[in-house]
Every structure is written in structure tokens, then in C-alpha cells.
Length: 180
Image (cartoon, rainbow, N blue to C red; front, top):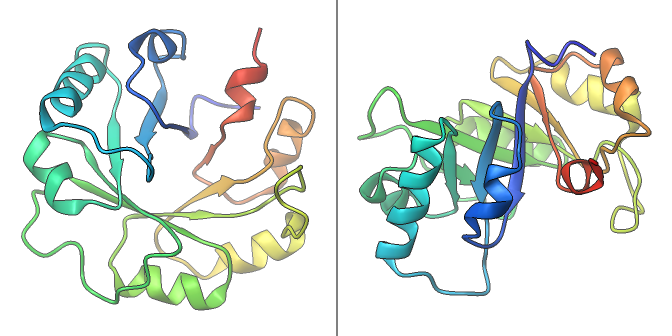
């Protein structure tokens, strides 16, 4: 697969810099933790560490903090269905990521004016009993002007199937944990 042209993302739920240092430099980080509260100071240190190591870093579902603390952008999860334009009042180099599982959520992400849409779940795994598969994924992604990122169940065994998709990148968690 020609990973040089693809954007690659992973999700992290803690501020462990050691885990970040093990990732390929091309991998972009989405910090997503809905259980714990993090102090702004800790998040700023994490953002600074990522930037020093030439990694883009995004904060999940908190536009104000993402802008205030120097993140490269914000990630709007599929459950956030507020139909507001997230582009209003942001800098040009601030990226709005969003995720969707179906046509209804894709429409919401367009109304939110996202730059990139993560469509999931692509493959079946332990968490995803219902999944899109290649054909449904391509149908969902075909009529979008935003960049499309494949998400869900991507691992070392099925990564070659990504070549059959019209995507700008992929996002994964277990893919990077499986790596030797």
C-alpha cells in the first residue's frame, strides 16, 4: 500500500508521551477521553510534546479548548449532531475532523462544515458486529467533497483491502498496537 499519500490517524485516551514516541512520524493523534477530566496545563504539555515531535494533534469534542490550548484541530464524534458551523471564527490552519456511520450522520457532518470525515465501521471486529464493508463504504464516501478517512476494524490482516477504497487516509487503534 502507498502510505506516503495517505493521512494516518490514531486515537489515544491518555497523555502518555512514551506511546506517542513509538508511532511513525506520519501518524496524527486524536486525543479522545470522555471519562477523565484533564487540566489545561497537562493538555498543553501534551500538545507541545506532539508538536516538538512533528505530530499533528486533535482534541475530541471540545472546540473551545482545542483552539485555546493550541491543538491542530478538533474531532467531532458521530454522536455530536449539533448542526452548527464549526468553521466560524477559526484560523485557516485549524482542521475540523468528524465521524459518521450512516447517511444521516454524513449530512450532519457536512452541516458542521468538517474538513475531513471518518466513515466507520469499515470492517467487522469484536466491537463492530455491524459494519459497512467495501461496497457500502464506497457508496457512502462517493458523494463527499471532504477528505474521507476509513475507520473501524483496520488491522494488519485486512490493510491491503484499503487499496479498493477511494480514501484520503485511515484511522486505527489496534493496527498500531499489533505492530511489532
